[in-house]
Length: 83
Length: 335
Image (cartoon, rainbow over all chains, first blue to last red; front, side):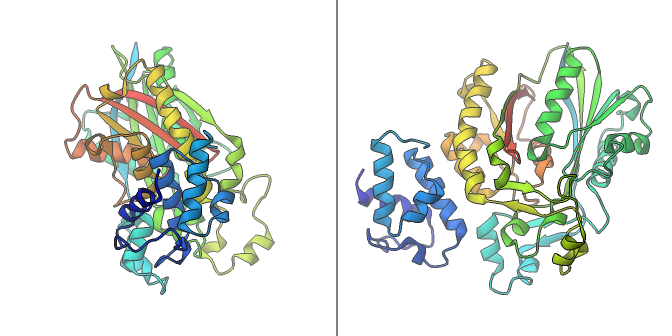
């Protein structure tokens, strides 16, 4: 998986996001109108797309889109699906 | 001898709060914000003093009016599911039995099970009929979650609604209700609960003082939900439950015409649909106009789907519910 594909998946999910807005360094909690609901949407999106179910602690440890990408990739490669 | 769903009716309180009205209580939110948060256009609110059993009785009235050939005298077992019983004892089912004037030879029991209440009741009704212990089981559901939501809990207020439902399950030459699979994950207790109001933590003066600013001081306790963990539970366990349900009933996913899941929230439904790879035309969602009505949500979805002529006789449906406990349950029915 490439990060460009990961960002594309996120941008497609959030209709308010203009394509090209996000970069690997984007702090996802700085997205317009961020709320706890967005955290749920991120977790559901990553699980339904990559079969990786992040924990609350894992999500808290992420700051940027790249952090999310890395932990998703790590869990995919380690077979940590639904950990 | 088997069992089949014979009649379904539901009742929604006349007071409906749309997002524009709800937003008046939250100046920082717009009606659109509330819809984006919940996927609900409006939720129905029971009047003060109305309990789930009252809404269930209203649903029975609808059932009788909708089915003039049906007689309550046929009922030989009553199951009532709710999160707020009328009394500690006797059972609310006994109270309903009296109010409905049911046959004295009719059994009656409560099954307080939360969002899985309908399917738990259906599993019991089906088993009783298959065993020859009953011929016509009346399942009554009544839920008033809005009475246990703190005004600060905007997400809960936007999602939940009150409702009642009445379902008749009857003896049938061939079984139209399949086998059930169950799941209980007690570690989920802390993530979705109404902790105060029962025997272990009764409402006391401290509680009344603490919630002095709330309607009736939250007399039925307060719903506390960790939405993140509820979502994780559903994403992790429900696809597996679906697989077990199909396996138990010896049917493949491609043979299923419709999937009717507990109408928990728009985001939850969308995520589970994706995770289970269910096409739109087979996935039943009637969430927008009544919200999450706890145990009533699947019967409401079935009735609305039927009223919209989406189902035809012989259609195979997977029914799946999940919720407080955590608990989950699945089955296959033939329409």
